[in-house]
Image 1: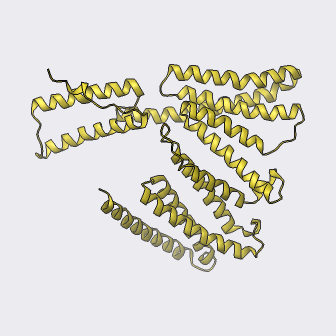
Image 2: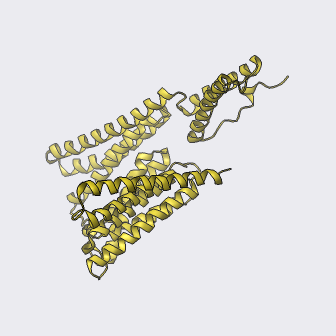
Image 3: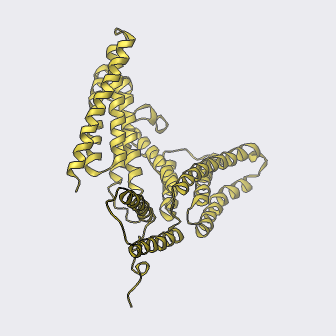
Length: 363
């Protein structure tokens, strides 16, 4: 007796792969309808039943195992649920902060220490309980972000209670806590919290190497360039179980670099470089164009759409900023915006050419 199609189906082992498979099935079904309407392909009733039975069983199995979105409406609702979960986590974190701010002085020191220590521990247990009960991890993400906020508050308040000298190492401890939760439960929102904390630690540490007090690290944008590059290269570390994490490292790393370069390209006086501020601005303007162009090329080559879009965005920002510097004060405003519009069309044509070229190299 032959096995039925549903018995031989290959099931992905990762949620992202499962969602991709669902999207492929939905796309195939729509294309099959289109082909039949155009009299290109007609399946027999038996073949159609086999395909429909196979897809129905596979979609049901993927939905049960990974809780993926099998319809367009479910995808839209999932995006809404992600936004709501983030807003809910932010609101609850703010509630925790203002609760401490309002009633903290009424607690004794031992009670304060117990509350601070117990808060993140209990919330971490809550993440585990929520993760066991739901596959989508929406409630786990909310509890996790609140746990991170409580942990940040924990270290800050304990430092004040025991008069501990603040250092940039707090950023590193926050990052480690966020990364532990992110990699344990696959929570991207906590990975972002860890990335931001790690960026603060790396930037402040680079600032101290140059002789600055660590709290002044934000006054020198070059500190953030080093941190952004470190984040970018972390993305090349294999993440077999968390394949959606490297793009976040890449995007946040490059975004940090581009913002720092953009600031230096317009305010050269805050640079470490001991040269005239105008020379610093010209130098970082060149670096900005080169870095944006390199990001576009690398994104196309490696099939990283987020990197390509980020590079294109900052290339346009750098270009329009230079146009403003060159022409705004002496060019008629209608002519200035006409030039901007024509340049936008030119960039569109160039990107369209690059897009067509990527099609030629694809198998």
